Image (cartoon, rainbow, N blue to C red; front, side):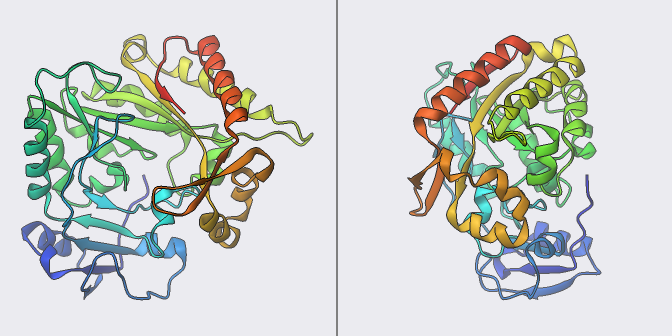
Length: 350
């Protein structure tokens, strides 16, 4: 995994608890600047990727609430961080922030107290559902990549310990990185890591500065052995064709990906592995930004003849595959999985 060494750290005064001060001490070479708000940063005079490489923000999360999800998890936990080292061309977090470096929230104990109060208010035993048959699941990484955040402070380890020991709750997060530091922690099955997968040559174009698909697949057995529950996240599924103009190339590439997965995983890992499948949603603002920073990616992501507009919950215009066409794509994807990896149950697909 690429090493993140910030050259600039921006921090708010209310983030300077013991954890915040410890993070500052980790990076004595960095220039440090106090800011009034963690989500309203000064003009840094850096390009998109330079900001992600060189800047770390420390803040205090003020909005402490657990939100219903029902898909990847039962609930979305209050954010432990926001932003990511990577520069994925379709990232929904980047859509909502003009400048988007990694922001760590240092008030981890407050966040965990909120989760504990929330889960203890829910009926118990839990009614089994597709997120988990026993525990209430909380996504702890909706706005960041926890694999990266884990090595930046002790906060994420505290979160892992909380869920490992909690009698009613389990953590889950998706990742595009393989962080060997996580293998030193035994979550005893109470942390679910979901490795995001897509055809390798597409990932190299759109998953900018992430670990390779081959590395992610190779890590699955290791993380299971270390005590994690391991799932996979086929997201986003991008529909594309070959040079001839037909749109069938993506099918062949996913068939090859499924065979790669089938060959790599041990039987006991396959027995516990589940998947989620999410077809691409893109965004008009992000499309315009990508034309300047990653135009080749837009050849795959912005295909108006296959897509339709969708108003997002935040008021912006997103685009997604035409709903009638998408229904056919979903059926194709499901059939490919049955043919190649019938052992891999789909938890949800849309």
